[in-house]
Length: 392
Image (cartoon, rainbow, N blue to C red; front, side, top):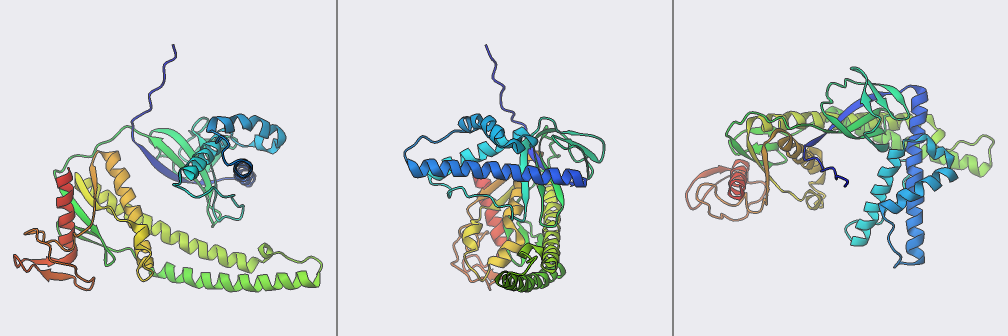
C-alpha cells in the first residue's frame, strides 16, 4: 500500500539573491527564457483553437498538458536544453489560468512577448544547491557566482531566475523553514496608514512616509529623454524604410534611445529598492515589538481610481507593507488581524460615539459628546486596534 506524503505545514518565505552569470551562462539563460515563453504561447494557441472550434470541449488538465511535453520536445528539439521542471510549472500555470478564466475570476490568458522588460522562468528544487558562500549550483547552468548565500536557511522548494530591465540577474527562492518564534512582549498595536505618514500606531508613534526625491526627479528626466529619443529613432527608421535605404536600422538599433531607457530603469529600480528597504526596517521593528498587530484591510485598487491621490497612494506601497507584516508575523509566531476600516476616523475612541464624516483637511477634532481631543490618525488607529481585539 502506497503511503501518501503529507503536505508540509512549515512556513515558507522568499529569498532573493543576485546572480553573476558568465557570458555563456547568460546566453543559456536567454534561451531558457525563450523556451518557457515559446511553450506558453504554444499552449495558449492550443487552448484558443480548441475553444474557437468547440466551446463545449473538455478543458485540458495539467496532466493532459504534461503528456504533450515529450511530443513537443521531439518536434522542437531546442526545448530539451531547458530544465524540464520549468515546463511543468508552465503547464500548471496555464491550466490554472484557463480554469480561472472559465470560472469568471480572471481574464483570458495572453501570449507572452520577448520584448517585456522582465524575463524569467521558474523551476522545482531538484538539482539546486548551495556551493559555498557565493556560488549556487543550478540545473543546466552548473556553478553560478552569486551574492551571499548565508541568507538561505532551510529547504529550497522552488526557484525563479529573472533578468530585470537593467540587465541584472536574480535568483528568487521559496524556502521552507522551521518556525523561529520571537520572544513575546505582551503588546498589541493598531496601525492606520496614511499619506502624511506611512504608519500611525495606536500608542501615538508615527513613521514618516517614504521619499526619494532625487531618484524620482532623475527618473522623470530620463523618462522624458527616452520618449524624445524613441520618437526621433522611430521617425528616422521610417524615413529609411520609405527611401529603401541600404542597411536601414530598426527601432531597437538606436543606441541613444537604449541608453536613456536603461538610465531610466536604473533610477526606477533604485527607488523600488530604497522603498523595500524602508518597509522592511519598519515591518521588522513592528513584528519584534508587538505580539498582535491590527491593520486596515484596504481595497487599494478601488482607492487608486481617484486620480488626484492615486500616485501618492501607490508611492507609499501600502499593499507591500501589509504583505510584509503578514508573512513576517506568520514566520515569527505573531498575530496579524485585518479589519474593515469603515468609520474608524468618525468614531470617538473614548466614548464610542459616531461624530460624523470629516474632510481630510481636519487633522484634529474634539468629540462633541465627551469633549475628548483627538488626533485624527491616532484615533483611527486606536479604533482599528479595538476592532481587531474584538475579533481576537
